[in-house]
Length: 470
Image (cartoon, rainbow, N blue to C red; front, side):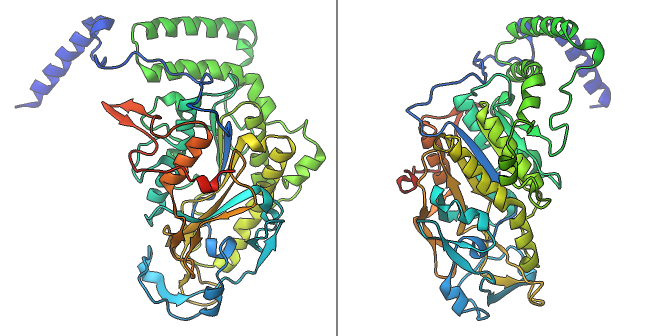
């Protein structure tokens, strides 16, 4: 029972491994299917409405009560006690006093959609969006609700929506990544890289990070002594060695993904630089995205990059705000307007730009986070310091393009905005609807992992919501 026995076994095992032929590889799994995974375009199950998607991810929980969901009854009951059951995330600072929105709502567009005065940019494009006021995940923590919205369940280790779409449909370009994550210069969002993970899918379907400042993609330029023919010869030789190695190890998906990443990196040396270069954009376009305004310049630039990437064949792009930008437990009166100013004009510009280029019909735009906020006061220590706690039982987000209705409000919360009560949209219903618009049948769309058939919906019974479809 001494440690010597373990050491001896380890040495003997190393000898066996070193002596083994590729056919006796100790890491090979006999049951492993010799499938090959790539990013070439693939046919969906049926004719799609959408071909690409841009998700504007507002991490932290934008307050639907102050942005999207006006509640006259809440205005009347301001300061009174909430009667009924309510679930707090931060019970230590909780109160039962109702808080009306301090901001006014106005009707916009031909559809007359009511939007907060904090979102004047969105007010200009309401006739092109569907506002969902009845979202629900039912888990009050950021991490679990993020995973529900991004990955389908509240568990870690699952592929994101972007990974599923690139697995199912591939990409329309060989010169750019199929799936990109445009991160914020402040901080990574909660859950970090899990927001663009491939989970149990082959690693070729992981999101590629686009940095928030130049160089937006690292290591694109070879050193001077490798430029030109020298680099071409070196890469060709490397590919030859890799292919020989892979031929003896069928089913090694990480190795396949690494080879594919080498090939993509070589192709990106010119294409990626061009995609993030705004020199060919008009001044009118730059101004529309807010690039002349310090408050909107950074987020506007990422929205414009996302449009340029989708235009060049990228399948899925997700733009993140920083960690907890929208998590207003306190000082909501000052912090919510600041959060809105950063993203409102660029988000609306993205919808306008896609529409004027004829791309909105085939590109889904999503704006939202993992939760909303409660109708009661949190941190009741003065008007300037009050905030709102988490609410995943009824919150809002909006979608546009790609087969969604235009100028439409779907679902409703109760009279105080606490819970979704009409046409509830669970995260798995939203995912089923997304897959449908991309021409994918959620019941047939799966991946076999560890002798189990895995899917985005994962047997949760998600339904395609016909009331959202144009």
